[in-house]
Image 1 (cartoon, helix red, strand yellow):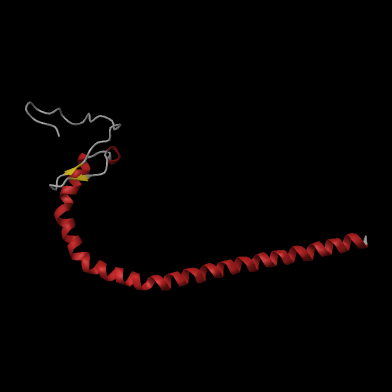
Image 2 (cartoon, rainbow, N blue to C red; image 1 turned 30 degrees about the vertical axis):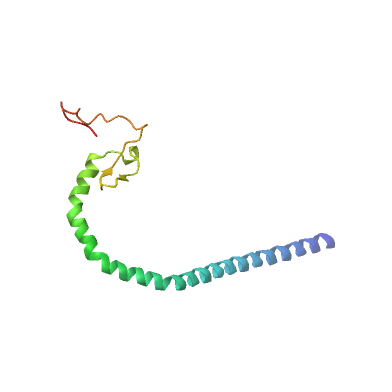
Amino acid sequence: MKQISSIALALAITTSAASAQEDEGTSLMEEGAKLFFRGLMDEMEPALRELEGLAKDMEPAIRSFAEEMGPALRDLMEQVEDWSAYDPPVVLPNGDILLRRKKDAPPLDSLPPPEEGEIDI
């Protein structure tokens, strides 16, 4: 009986010591993560402040672009149902922008057929 009780006592002490180490390990891990992210924020702070200043400088230009191009982009978004059916835009040397449909894209049923003499590019 003495052996069983001493084994049970040793097991209980070992288990409690292991759980205490796990708790310390978790808190050490948490503290390490906090220190890591705090150091990362300290390193990034000057770049973030510079980015904030740049955003303030660009705000009028972005607002102007949104006011001028907003309606045209809205119309384009209404006309194009599925952007995944198109390849990335290609800019030609003369400045033209081509939006090519992918070869495996479904046919355009919603568009009317071209009129006589009209060329579909």
